[in-house]
Length: 255
Ligand code: ADP
Ligand code: MG
Image (cartoon, rainbow, N blue to C red; front, side, top):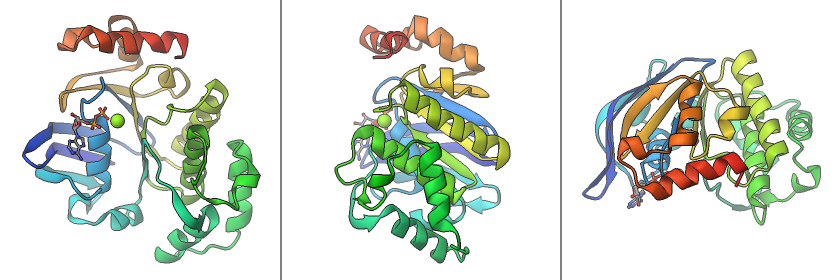
């Protein structure tokens, strides 16, 4: 279980997360929706331990592990995996080399890794020809997201944070990725925090719970119907301007 209690964090003197409380159990998919600039990516970065953010209070536990006390790589070893909104390019390192290193560092047996990568790449329709290239370098937005999903599928973390995984993915790719996430949540009890701006992701990846993040706070929590409601009403009732409503509305047309 991922347990976030009263998490407050910011950059410099600016407080961005203003008291987040959230519990996601193994095998559950929770969605975090919210307008631009509400703190969604900041939450993903602070959970993963990206340098540059200051934690001002609260706690984050993955099972019994106090994540905030650990550097990012140890959080990864503890079972946390982040698909970031903008996956970074790593020149000179292939996907297989990165995964090999991850297996070695955590003392896991990497036998059969190559075949496993090929299998997962095929199921996610990630072009095999890209496997030999440097990680994410010159990949399209969609290829980067699929590439990150191959890593998640092979690594089998306890918990995945998917930050705007829908950006750059067409409808077919969105379905591939959603099916693979659902399979992991059913078979491996993967817990998932799926961050998204648009409700179209949540038509494919059915969440157990939906949380609305506004100005660094969770303003509402509900079932999948909350995402459907946001599609028609936008974030206006949370005091967010009309242009954000249009962005949510645009998702109906898959824009
Ligand atoms: P979202 O992902 O919901 O669109 P972000 O978490 O990216 O929002 O950003 C939330 C707010 O925090 C924005 O106002 C953004 O400008 C600010 N912010 C995020 N990261 C930084 C940073 N490293 N330095 C300064 N401000 C930041
Ligand atoms: Mg973001």
